[in-house]
Image (tube, rainbow, N blue to C red):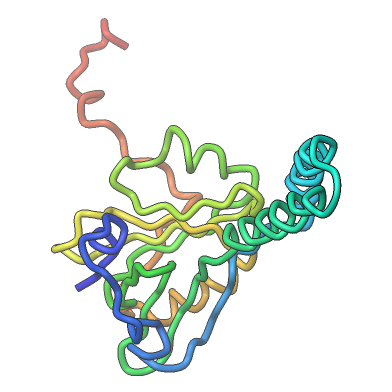
Length: 202
């Protein structure tokens, strides 16, 4: 049974040994969603300016305390933004992990790669409110993973990743063999309501 909804809502607290490697074996794919380099300068400059403002009001040794406290604190916070990892494990029952949430690959359905051009639509008008989303704004590409577990109310996962094709390939290899992805070029099925309309309605 997948645990995406429970892990997301915090109903269970993971044990210290409840990691992808400890549960199902060595990882086949691991990606830490670290903050891009261009996201660092502005927070660090802001912390330095705030420290300088405090500095001007306190002479002597205390003048340096804001720099000692605020700059390391800014670094810790920025590193925390990239703490979450996306992992695909191996073994007899491989799983997809996103932080503490994990989904056995036997419950993976269709897998879609969402490029930067479709990202806004996938996270906006097309997004199901019940979906499990791990979005990092500094990463332009996503992978959308259908959840087929009948006991999991989560319809699909949407994950930021810098390596969408590689992640999608591993998920497709690990899911049940009879599952296929929909053809994006196939026409959408006709609305049955259209057949009920008379000539005057057309």
